[in-house]
Length: 155
Image (cartoon, rainbow, N blue to C red):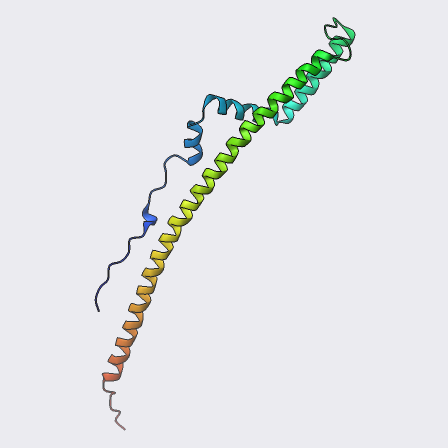
């Protein structure tokens, strides 16, 4: 029976020592890091609570104390409008980055799946060759059993 070359299985690949997320985090610009930091802080209950507290203090200080921004708090409305505009831009920057991360992860997943498919196909080929060899061995054993004379029984 001729021996055939066994395909090499790529599963012996070494995994990356640094994860994709760590590598990507190192490649961020200062603006992208700032957008992520601001997005993460503005999207928290601590920010909401702090901002509500700030507005209450502003209203109290301008209603009962010095009063640099009397009711209807036009200066506070201006600051709130500017904050809303900046938040929108920051959230769009962050969303755009998240989309690019999702696309890169999808590409990475696809590449991983293709590599796994190649490994699985190689393993299936090895398995099929082993099944053929086992069937050949069974056929040889059957021929050996048929060609062996049966022992005569003495009565």
